[in-house]
Image 1 (cartoon, rainbow, N blue to C red):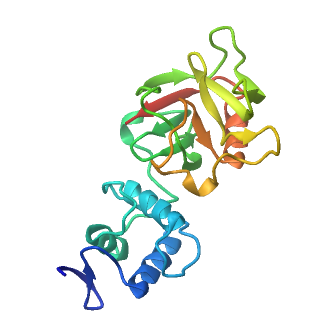
Image 2 (cartoon, rainbow, N blue to C red):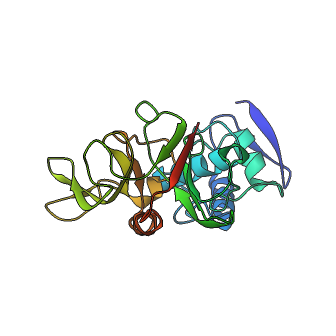
Image 3 (cartoon, one colour):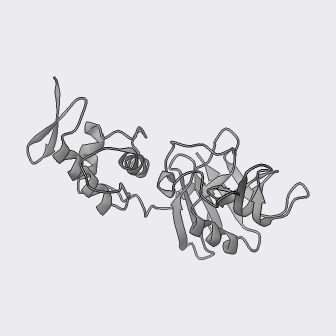
Length: 224
């Protein structure tokens, strides 16, 4: 079986898999870089895959979720970028705004002085939401903000903040009306493994922050 060389303690990575020791090293490093891979157990499961996507997106790598040789080498390099703290893309202008990067699966809330108030992972659907500049507020005769919006069925879209016609906005990961549980876990945010129906899904705490940040109209910049 062919092996791909990686400059990590003189070891190599098999072309089709990492050893348990190498996977633990990767999980430890992902944790240190704020990528939240879950337990360091040597098993490259769903949480580790999601963390790997967050790392790949932050480091401009192909978002496969696989700890391949390129990703592994970049991960253990001293130049590896963190998953949880990222620079606001320059091409999004200045001033108070919310910036969405569909390529990074990420959102930034920026105040009038250009300081990042908060940032974090998202799930969206580029098929529905196109790049451009939008403004939060009432649209199509619908309210700008709705605490317990609904999909008209079995889900709530909590802390819904509208910014694009007609039904697109920010909201917490949808919750079931029956028991209040989210339809998927927070650790999938910041990845490309899920797709929304057009809105921007965020964590419950991030949705509360956006709710307050968009109490007055705010510019929303969407880039690929």
